Length: 332
Image 1 (cartoon, rainbow, N blue to C red):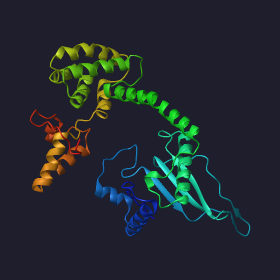
Image 2 (image 1 turned 180 degrees about the vertical axis):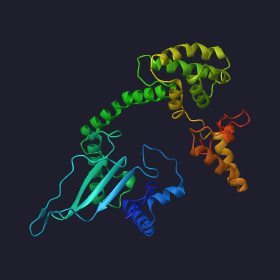
Image 3 (image 1 turned 45 degrees about the vertical axis):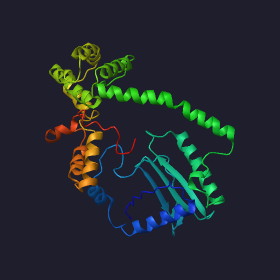
Image 4 (image 1 turned 135 degrees about the vertical axis):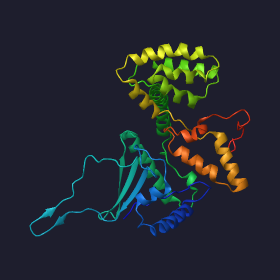
């Protein structure tokens, strides 16, 4: 059987029974297309591809109605062996297997160790159990009010505090790693965040476009000839030159070819982003003139945001004063 991709919306004040009915109907409809390979669906939808995760989904639920049991033949006995380590194909997978002895289900999680710690998944499993117990107790309850945390208030508060306390260091670590990659650093040094912070302050003072700066910084990392295009972004070009002294001193302490560094930087510093004025123009064209050409072209550009696309170079430009969008497409 082919993998079926389902998109569920659990908001809107539905009860669990109502939600279950929607999921059942959606699943039955999806089953009518189960002969279509997932690869064909991906090819038609053309989502943005990444080597780090599946194209259309990252979480899988698998229901197995055939429990693996001991099998005895004439002179042979086959016994299922539980694998200690399983390679995770998805970010998170929940597998349910029918248990003939208890007439219940055996549940197991498989997860990406780069994204989840074992304790986190154990806690997730406990929340899932609390959810199932709440559903069994009252399936007519609004799904947004179904319980996830345990009833022990002290345990809940302690768990919440522990989870919150882990955020600042994890955020700082993720921010630091991201900025190092954008600046071309392949190793970690104590003063890296000071260099990054200094650049951001100079960018703000000179009203420098964030996306353009980091993209053009890739060329500057490869050769000083790239400095001219960076200068063009600053009201005061000396602001960049002063900062670049420390930046290049830091780069020189790493043994990596400039061309290789620049190539790595281009993989994390996009040339194109969905700028508000471009998105707004596409929406206006579609709504007011039934013209979807701007949307299709914008989609084409954003499908490969890290590639240089000379034909669409104007999509990299920030808005002119007349193009600035003060109310975005989402209403904020």
